[in-house]
Length: 541
Image (cartoon, rainbow, N blue to C red; front, side, top):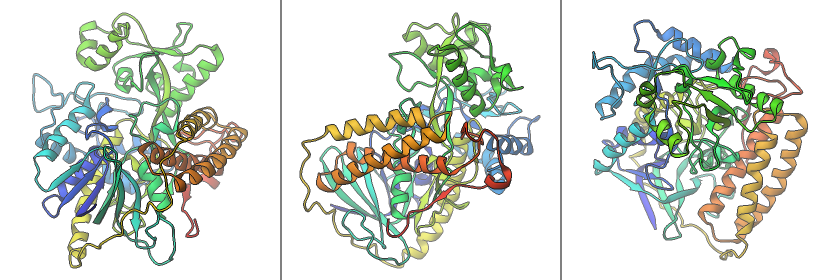
């Protein structure tokens, strides 16, 4: 089946939904999301949105904190426009029904939290479920809009561009790329549909599932980055993978994050010997930036041989803890951990991609009619390390800017009819009787990425990872061409592609900066490496 629409949005987190709401008055909108619409990384964002509202804070301080975290690689123009637009975007969310925490004594004043790397309290939050509250409000509005069609349980396979043939994206010509939609698998019916669109937006989120341990939802398999790269878009800075310092460590807990806000409210990291340790690593102690804290925990685990460290907030009033962190308290208690009386066991886990598909300040990629927003994109905001709670902020600001430009582009594109595109080609493929290839390679990639391309890297580890990904890529390619596509195969193909790009980027950067730490090059080298790592697929592939 072929669907035709003005706007095709791939992904249903805060970036994609915000864009959809803003463009819906100007054209028909299709949102493709591979699970339930609420199953996104946005939903699990606990901390909040960084924005300047306090009278003792300023745009200049927020800008400086962001630049400091980014370690010399932030685009200062982007940082300034995002920070200055933040308050407007937060108020817009309130107009859309998002209920943030306000002071009881003055309902016009935000109850602002503090997180690592911030010099002032500026985290707008909804208890410790900010992402869920934002996602809920946006989904409610999406479902009410008749011009927006939601395709749940649909996973995008590949983008369709005018420089490609119809047989699974084989490049056959060399004229200028222009995106005209995507091939999408309906995972309930196992049917591939063609989505033709005047404008396509990638908002698929991050790629935490490339790693064995992650705070991310299961949907975070780097789909947008992989599809864009295969289509010929430029990507950048994929060596900068942020590992959140504090994921809950428990055999029955999966991907559960212990918010940075716990440390912002006074939580202290202690090692297995019961001693605080962050003062050894940074003057800001437990409120140091995430790259510093993650490496410190990694070092403590290796030094002591213990399986976790602990986050202790028991010195705070129990009623305050239960009220400020109701979701975290409830989750920990369900596992037998009372955070009001005992420390929480935590370990680092892959959390956020600071690199992605390169865009301009309006979310446009270097493929015509293709936009990218949110964690899928590399806008220049984060540089070598993301400042806490700048992610939802970036998604909101760039979704707004991308929508304004996409509406302008639509006026030009509407003069011509939407193209008829050939259906998905299944010639020569059969159903697989070797599904073990998919599950085995999925597991192997995530394990060697964790062991060799994790928090601390070395030339030898990266070389081992490169050898493995080369062999796995050959297996996946042969399998992909011979068998009918499935959701698992699509995701495997994407995590393999993103893993390859992360390894290649990490091997090329001969220094340590921000989230990339190589023991062979422990120092930062501004003279040679204060620049982005850019990768682009050649026209020959």
